[in-house]
Length: 111
Length: 112
Image (cartoon, rainbow over all chains, first blue to last red; front, side, top):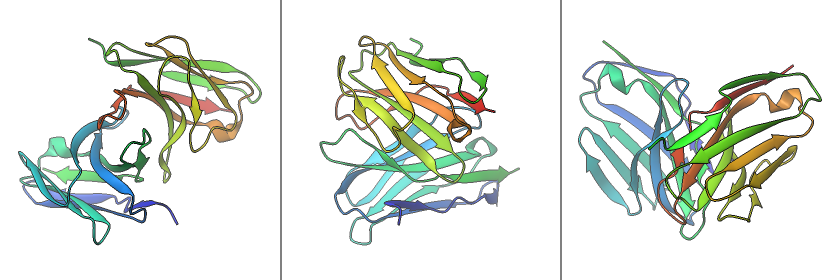
């Protein structure tokens, strides 16, 4: 079993819809949670990070962490065609340099 | 400020050939990383370097060697390329124990 599980999609939604992307994990030592966005043929770029349970909001993006269920989510409100990308969740243990990534979910926003 | 740069962008090798992938960062970061990305497998860590002069194995180090030439540069070498090493390779850098890793644009490698 992988430490981090992420549905690879693909996921297609109409413009303006709310998107929900999710990851589950098995290692209870993970304390830092990140979402990266990767456009086609580009490197990943950090979108959001959080280290506590609950919600963190940044513009149209909300990251949600439920440590009791070992479940994290990324919500995108008012989705735009420019949000079309692969979204990767990533996690790490406090004091550890290494990130553990999910496989990524490919998202397409249809105009 | 170019961030993380990688060369080459594309490369085709024959089985058994060797090559070195170059990575440089201009953000004065101590930590640098090499990942490979394959369909359905996500990003997997090959090697990382927490500081100049130190390197450590990641999840998939077999068939690779690395050199942390100085604080800016971290190279990845394939001594005898195999088709299983066909992948997209990403270099990243970060401050020590930082939350953010900054990624380069990647090198697409095909081994025939």
